[in-house]
Image (cartoon, rainbow, N blue to C red):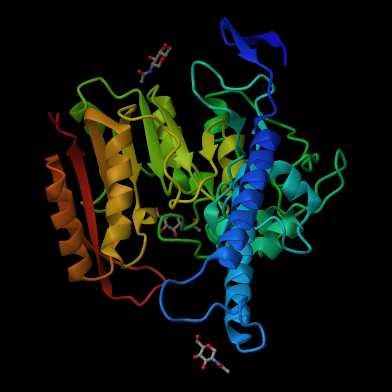
Length: 418
Ligand SMILES: *[C@@H]1O[C@H](CO)[C@@H](O)[C@H](O)[C@H]1NC(C)=O
Ligand SMILES: *[C@@H]1O[C@H](CO)[C@@H](O)[C@H](O)[C@H]1NC(C)=O
Ligand SMILES: *[C@@H]1O[C@H](CO)[C@@H](O)[C@H](O)[C@H]1NC(C)=O
């Protein structure tokens, strides 16, 4: 055991060198053996006070008592062993993923193994080990995860981003890191901002593997989502946010004016091909667009426009600190199903990252029925936001049923809570 110096961040800390883990396991092992033996000794020497005859004094008369004692001892040994295995697992490996199951990729075990800090406990953070994080639901998809983690170390990664996305959608988020080189796509013909915002993106610089569509023509003719009808056609997209089609559409300049000049960074949920972020970029507002690649190469397309795509499902807590955004913009992509609690968790997370005085712009949120509208309205009112704009309108769903559909658009201002 020696004492060594370690540079952490800006300071130098001193730690004792110790292999905490194996030491703890040894102690446990010893403890378990002693307890087991004590119990055995107790069981064999214990003589009941009642009239039950001690079988050791009358060995020929009654053997059933002995076997009772023995079976008790066996039970105790068994339970100690199980306890020991459990504690060992907690000390050595990941807590919820059973690393001892067969056919688990070796790389997954490597990734998940807890790593003791080489110099023991860090004095500033109090941590003693590094724990790799992986979504707890990965346990349910262990086979897919193992497939995802089967690759040649330092070799090329399999072309399997669709498998990765499938895992994410099953709640296996975050995914483990990998030690392989992701396929590169040469990004030729990129221009600088602001020209890049509206310049057609080359089909060759996107990844189409795993997608039904292999070109923009296909994407633009496919009804991808309510917020992305032909959204990969940038000529068509230029109308958005600067021209209104219905009373549910607000103009960017109007909304920015409501923020009295303090709108500089924003977060867009369900932002399609990034057009909201593009328009905001022209107003010198930096917007991060949250998107997965469901049926289309959204993330790469947004990046090709010179905008920031965040590849994250809506089930994931937003990776931002509290009170950082001046603006959160959300479309029908905010819809997370029928469970009211689901929407509440999401709304609280949005509220958390939005600063007081910041704006929450609900843009053409599709209300499947009146009940949905009421639920959402009630929820928003519970947050105590100031309604700067509130419009409920009907639109005929082009290409859909032809029936009018209900949409809610609103600009809400987060209050200061004390
Ligand atoms: C042995 O002991 C048990 C309990 O002490 C008693 O119930 C049983 O009848 C005994 N058997 C014989 C064969 O004496
Ligand atoms: C073009 O934009 C309009 C809305 O302005 C939309 O309804 C239409 O589906 C888009 N069409 C295509 C082919 O992009
Ligand atoms: C954005 O910033 C640039 C450079 O600072 C400035 O010239 C331009 O006027 C700004 N645009 C808007 C809409 O504020």
